[in-house]
Length: 189
Image (tube, rainbow, N blue to C red):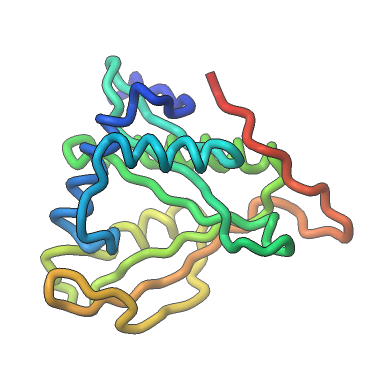
């Protein structure tokens, strides 16, 4: 899959985003939501996040095959230079470089805004034979330069089992005195 383009997600993507995400909600412990949001809710979320942060879609042959976005890490002013990231790739197109391209574009957009830290909250298995989550996301983030900063035990309950979550971070800018306050997102084409 070489013809992947990355662009800002738009209203017309809501059905595709909901479909991609539904797999992860219904079949995995990658997300701790129990009920998959419909297209209208996905569009509401996209609109809200896009007001300030990038919300990107990966497209191949006219079809949305993944998406990634960043949102506020915490609602306090001193956290303005930090975001939390999320990424979901269509289950049928995983391991084809889409996630890397999405995260590279997301990081580029965040850097241009003045964001310095990207944080990722990742569900991890407590048992290596867990049918609902693997260490794939942890390995993916490590490969992209994220480092492990913490583990919270028994933080999420789904599919009649408890899950740990880990936090990983990637520093993407210089931490100086009087940093430029981050700008709002400038959507891609």
